[in-house]
Image (cartoon, rainbow, N blue to C red):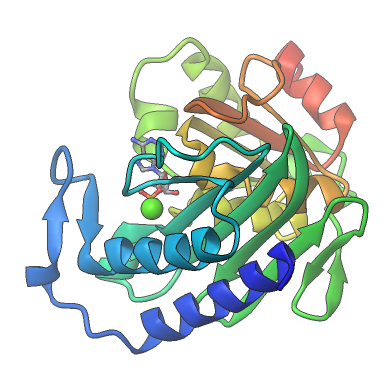
Length: 258
Ligand code: 2AM
Ligand code: CA
C-alpha cells in the first residue's frame, strides 16, 4: 500500500473509533494544567496510527503529540500526526475535533489529511493536486476588504488577553474585521480558511502535529501561511502561525495596515 492510501485508511478507522467511543470525565487527565487535557483515546489512536505507519514504512519518522519520536527512524519521510486536534472540544462538546495526518519528504509536502470526525468531512490534498473536501474541490475566499473578513483564532485567551509582541495589533485587527471566531482546533480552522468559510487565521502557539497536515491543504487551496513575524513556518518546532486567503492580505497583516 502506498503512503497516501495508508493514511486515508488510517484516518477513516481513527474517525470511526472516535465516533463510537464512550468518553467519561474519568478518562480525561491533565497534561500540564486544567486547560491542557489528554484522554485515553488520544493515546490509543496515536498508537494505532504509529503501528500502521511503521508496520509498512519502518524507516519513516513519526512525529506525534502524545509519544516521543522513535530514535530508530532515519529516513527522509516524516509523518506529523495528531490523534485528536481539539481535545477539549472532544471532551466537552463531542464535536469540533479532528484527526490530522501530514506527510513530508525532505522538508517538502507530499500530502495532508484532516478529518472533521463528527461532520464526516475529510479535507485532503496531495502536493500539486489541489485541495478537496470529500469529493469536492475547495478554494480560499476571494474577500479583500478587511471589514468583510472573518478572523479565526483557536485560543482567544492567548491571542487577545495575554501579553505577546503583537497583542496591540491583534486588538486593532479584531475591531477592523467583520467578526472573530474561535473553533478551538488549529487543523479545522486552517481547513475553514482553505474552504472559504474564514479569511484569516492567527495563533500564538501551534505545534508541528497541529498545522503540518492542514498547511498542505491550505497551500493547495490557494492560501498562504507563515509565522506571525512573517517568517517561513518551521516544520519541526512549535511556532506562532498566521494564515491568509491571499498574499495581499498577508502583506497588510505584516504592515499592520488595517
Ligand atoms: P490539541 O487539541 O491537540 O491540544 C486550541 O487549544 C488549539 O491549540 C488546539 O488545536 C490545540 O491542540 C492547540 N494547542 C493547545 N495547547 C497547545 C500548546 N501548548 N501548544 C501548541 N498548540 C496547542
Ligand atoms: Ca492533540
